[in-house]
Length: 285
Image (cartoon, rainbow, N blue to C red):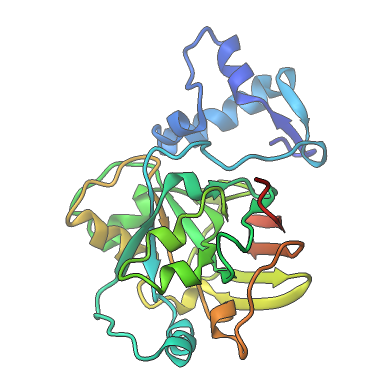
């Protein structure tokens, strides 16, 4: 995006350079820090010849398009969220180490898409605003002091959850993986634009009423610790997405519990990463 809110079409830009440039954002992510430098130079020199339109006139899709692998999610990473969850469902037997689960790649949708989930699918659809971390440089056994150097950028992700499905089973994957239910974006903001990812405000609204308001500094396991811990047992690769957990204020923790119903509008925002706006709609058979 140029300074005047004009958006550069990178696919068109790549085509103009005889295929010498990456054709997808995921391929750009794989270039790591070099991608940021190269894109900055290209947009400054030839970007205006490849304008897709104004940001206000375009409908943004999810960053990276179809993700290459499932999203790695972190459960119970804010103390106040643990407290409200235990008040709702009883004591949680949590280890001292991070708790992980995954969301199916098909659960991801765009930052302004409708979330199609009728009550015949779930009557307990819940919201969870989270900071998503996108890996840009592959690594295994990453030291915490070097972990942020493996991050390409950050984005907003709402880990929309079907609580009735999630809590009726001994694993969370199905209740976290309703197709095209979890908005991602609107932007993938590169690491250099976010000097301190552990000091970002997270906020979430339902029908204009604020439900969640916290800060990433309150994470139990910070981003560097999570990247390092995951890399102990698997090689992190460019395009891997780590969703770092949600703070207090979810519907499950309300008294009485509150759920997303058809017609509701869900908004999610993190400092410097933009705001999502998604409408809940009844599934069409």
